[in-house]
Every structure is written in C-alpha cells, then in structure tokens.
Image (cartoon, rainbow, N blue to C red; front, top):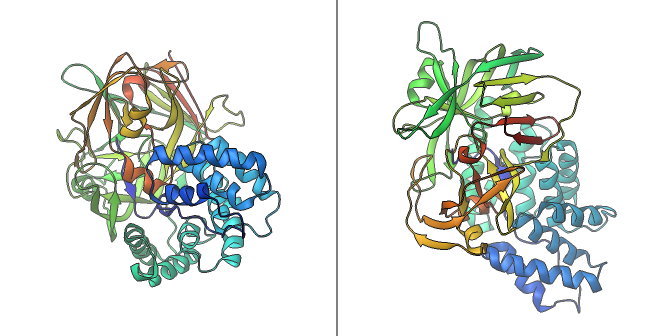
Length: 465
C-alpha cells in the first residue's frame, strides 16, 4: 500500500536548511544555489548542485561547510552510500561541525538502525546548537526517552511559525506531544509471548482479473467477535485499523493526530491509541500502538487493517508466496542480501530502471503494482510519458498521475515487464521523509517469490522459488 506517513514518526519531517556559515572569501555562487536547492529546489536542481559540490571538494577537500552541503544533497536525492561516505569524513573530527552535519549523520544512523549513535549525535549537536530548529525537531526521534522527546518537541512548538517552525512539522509535533502525554510511562508493543520461531498462514488476495493484490493474515479479535483480516504491508509504518476492527480489538483511543501521505488531500485526521492484546500466531503483544482511520482501507472491504514488518523485529522473516506462509525465526546467522534503510518507518531499497537509472524505492508488499515517482520518470530514457492513470492510496485516489510507456524497474534478479508504469507525484512524501522516493516496488515484481528479511541487520533477499 502507498503507506501514510505518521505525525509521530518525527524523523520523516526533517527540514533541509544548511547550518553553518561559509568562511569569509569562500562565498561562491554554487554554495548559494546549493543552499536553495537543498531547502526547496526540485530534484533536478539538487542533482546538479551535488555534481558542483563534488567538483568543488576535489580542490577544497578540507572545506567542512561544503562537505556538509555535499552530504545533505546526497541524502536528499537518495544517494545514501555517497552521503554515508561524506559524513564519515566529517565525523573524523567533530570539533566545529555544522548543525546540519549532526542532523544528517544522525538521520543516516537511524536509517541503518544505529540508534545509539543517533542519540549521541543529537545530544552533541544540541549542546553546540541549542536553538537550531531543524536539529531540535529531528533530535526528538533520537531522544533517549519519551520525556526527552517531549521536551524537544515542546521547545519546537513554542517557537511557532513566527519563529521559523514549519507548519507541517508543527502539526506533526503537536500530534506526537498529544500521544506521548496520553501514554505517560505506559510501555507500548510489549511482548508477552515471544517464541523462537513461528509460522503464519497467508491468504492471497486476488483481483477480478486474477492479479495478486496482497497477502492477508488473520488475527483473533476480542472474545466472541470476528477475526481481523490484516494486509501484510511492508510499506506500512505500523498497525492501521478500520473503526470496526478497532472495536473488535477493544482499541483504547488516546489522541488525534495527522497522517501524511496517501490519496485525497494528503493529510488525514486519525486516532492513535492502544490495542490491549495483539496475537500474531504465538507472537503476542500487549499495548500495541495503532492508528484508526475514519474510512475504509479497502474500497471492497476485503481487509480490516494493515500491519508492517516492525512487529517481527529481531527475527529473520520469510514471506513464502508459493507455500502461502509467513515464517519467522530467531537465528544467529546473518542474511546474505541487499541492504535496506528505514526512513519514516518505511523500508527503502535501491531499485534500477532498464537504462541504469537508480533510485530509492519503498519495498511494498501492500502495493499490487510497481509505481514510480514523476521525478524518477523524468530521468528515464526511451520512454513516453502521458497524462492520466488511476491509483488508489490511503485516504483516497492519488492525484497528478502520469503513464510511463515502456518503463521497466528491477530489484536483485527480478524485473517488471516492459509495460506501462504509473508515475505519481511524491514531492510531499519525499520532502517530509527527507529523501527522494523513486517509487514503490509492488507485487507485480515481488509476488509469488521467496522474500527473506533480516530485521536485525537490515538485509533483504528476493528470489523466485
């Protein structure tokens, strides 16, 4: 599914202004253009600025401000390996780091699952730049405790729009504050039963023309009520329920928040709260955090909610499309697969088009077809781009669609067929996530395969049975 971005996932709402001033005599034209491109420029401008930054650094390798700009541009356009290399060079000496360097380094640390490093970077950065708004907002995601996150978000909200705070980020911060205040010290997603391994049956979801549209899990509801049908959605950022499913699970509402993304207006009011007990086979949780949507998640009412992969953290997960089962096991063996990164709770992998153009795609078992962003489509060669197309996302139909005739996208050994791809506008999602999204890898690519995900090492492998 084209997953929503939640107001409580504050990492995904990162402003992109560069911190730190250029030293006297070094205020060159490309830096001015780069600052503008990072803040709100289109991806094409950001890529041009990235090339200029690389050229400048060949002759000025010790320019830390330029290297910070280079790292943030690389992050912004989805060149994560380049961004990691640039940040690593900066972190060799942390004295006098620009505020943006702390933020970019911390964001990359969270993306690769290194929360301890992100926490340290947030604390060090705030010690040097206590009033830097972008750093202050991002640091809430890396806070050591809920109380620390609340302090930082309240400081951000207190600045308000007149003090430079971004309106969308203010909305997100207020929603997060409301949820955290309601939670107090309550532990969430607490495992009351954690087997070494388990198997869950999957039921394929088919369209009228026999196209695979998803895999469903059944979880028990409260006593005497119908079971809940959850779409297994690796593109989802958590647990999402319809109002009916929430009642059957004895959902306890706590606060209203804004969900970003999906269809319609791209911003949706939702309720956040706790499911007292959620059983995924023998893997049982108490106080599972859930988002309850006001409308249906599926136009045909074929499922009652969505669940991402996060409940299976610490397991090696196998989605076996051929045998219709989801297996999870605890093991010391690391999976030999491709890296993935987590941004705003979404699993991003590097996909490639037929002409070699690469980008970051959401690995999305909840999307029945592969979609590309309009900016990614504009980078492709030997394709014809037409207006039109129809896709439904969270909260309604997607707008501003185009059709890419002749496009093809691949990941590992898999590739979509030469056919028409739908391109959609992911500008808001990319801005709020802090990284350019190239699209979503769907079940036309991933369906009927063997998918293995190591949630400990953030590796994924996909192959035909």
